[in-house]
Image (tube, rainbow, N blue to C red; front, side):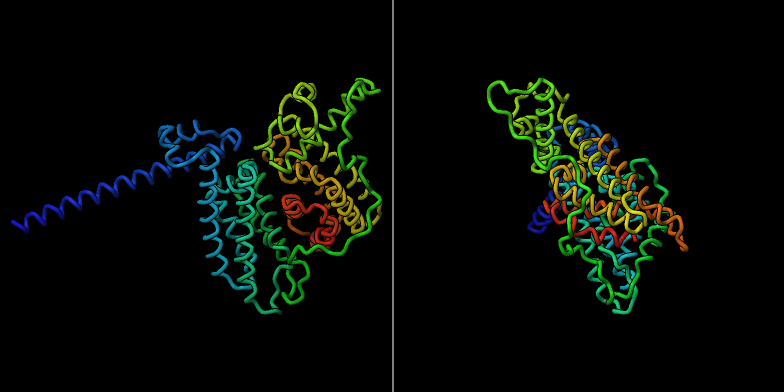
Length: 431
């Protein structure tokens, strides 16, 4: 009798355990479906276009179920990023540790391309959509690149000092690889074998004995004399108009208001990011009311696009002026980069819009960012026409993306004033 009772209790307990496991599996499955829904919805609609309704429709669950797992859209978005970034980091770590120490950089890059080829939608989420997700997403993006850089350097330090390894700032290089992949994934270009091979050849061109490296870290050099190629754009907004009836024409008042709104948009972007910024934030910073704002701009995106366009035009103007002021191509590269970094240093909030917020603002701003890299390629390609050892076609894309990453890093960390002192690093990459 006692044995039968014990057996009955054991069977009942097993049933409870099985039911508990079943509930847990169901919950894990629901959560995973929501994560997959967020991933695919964001890739197809962009960060701004993805919402909870799209995610639950794709996952096939109810809205209350969504809120059992996630506080809001951003919470789910960040959960996707955490899962994907940790998976990628583990894959890269295994690839680097399986390679010879002197091949650590190349192994990490091979792993990035292999994972992109294997899971293009996941890669697109990490290298494209994350850039539109606000400060938390950008922090996570930068964390991932920093973690991969540490894996590379912890392995490379085991190489012989005489072993040739790439004399490159690895963090900027890895961010540059992401920047290289981003437009290709937006264009649904998933066959990347040729590009991957060309990138590795480009990286190999920087091989030097490890003990002789000079450029592996982005340590700012000495302060440079200012370039004479400066922008006409004032570094600060015009002062607020005095109360009462100013002695200005209506056209002058309108121009003054527009300038203050554009500068305020840049300042708010640097402080809050595009996603969190509101028109109320912008009008408060500009010292104008909403009616004035809407007399100049349709909406928040329109104001951000105007700020982005202003920065793009001014930067291109000073860079081109400096570039064509010299005859020899190496000098042209130096002068153009020096003028560009000085412009960004003297206009840090404008630089922030260009380097950090383009993906968040939307496709017109992304196109402008692509245009700025295309313009850089035009400047750079002149010197490669006559080289005795032609570099792979992807070289210019890799260069522009890596140098852009240097600017992004300084702008994100509110250190744009250091950019002129990194001109030698950018020049080294090109020359």
